[in-house]
Image 1 (spheres, helix red, strand yellow):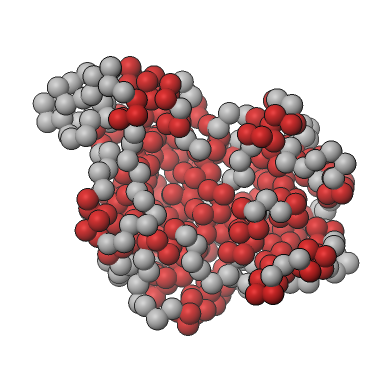
Image 2 (cartoon, one colour):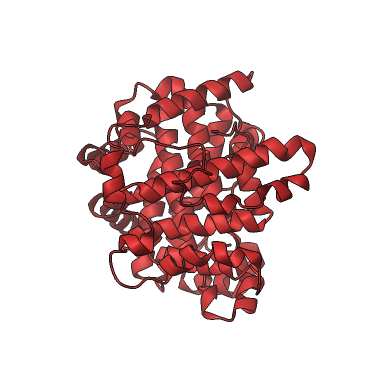
Length: 440
């Protein structure tokens, strides 16, 4: 979903563009003003270079070529850079002063050393942040889309050339910022839950961009691990994440979300033989991550879900299987504790109620949706243990010191990936299509 899907949006944007000799006139048909986005099937650097990209010099008029008769909108770029360094970089959900310093200082410094895709990723996220505060500002709408398109095109082109020691750090950080972009952009989709359930069900779209973007980070990390494992910048970012403490038996007595696996044997009986194991493991692992994040006192721990679930689980979500949608609703309910973060503001209510609208009245899955709906509609500040279902502060104390580090999981995943691939590098198409070894 994007703002340029409707012709009327393009026409509105054109009317706000600054006229110039190189800019298309206001009477130009909207269809000819589409912003070129990178194709997932880019097969070679030569083809990628041939793809037209909307650059910073073209923001004011969507012109196909830079307008050298007027300067770049330097004030806009300075405004976005100021927004990023003073505010946006502090909202990336890290729990370490050292990591805050990295996003604020080290990342811009790296971007200024020739990593233009990282610079554009920073400015794109900053534009989205400002746009969340001023949603009617057409200049910010233009900037958010233009910088995003420029970031993705250069990112794909660089991946096609191959990950190296020289670009591995920047690609990891760019992939992380692209994940923030993908999640933040959904806050600008019109809220379908204000209409009737039936009407909302016809228009609600599952948030596949969440999985594509976060799984993309996982893939880049695994593929470039030989170079970034010794990076102090990457190490600090990874260390800021909570370590996994997964109980891979989600049917145990202490499993809060074990009920989501009820009747799994019946579903697997209808599965093709070659997918039975992958489907079963995908569901088990997804529920295990939910159980872990539910008990974790660090709210951003829930964001490990879209990054760590298996490729097969992503596929069943895309198929809109009821079990996968119920699991997804529980994941978004876990984000309720981060309602105060701009790119996650009200995401729980929007996504949970949107997912609920996909279930028919009288569905046997309604009982599995009671908890996420109750959390999504909670409007009383901090959620008490009797509503949340567990006292995560007490759970954290009892489990203190146990569990593997995030680095150990990455080491394992990188090893599995290297064993499954004969090539030393990764194509952009494979990365974008989630051609990865499931973490589980």
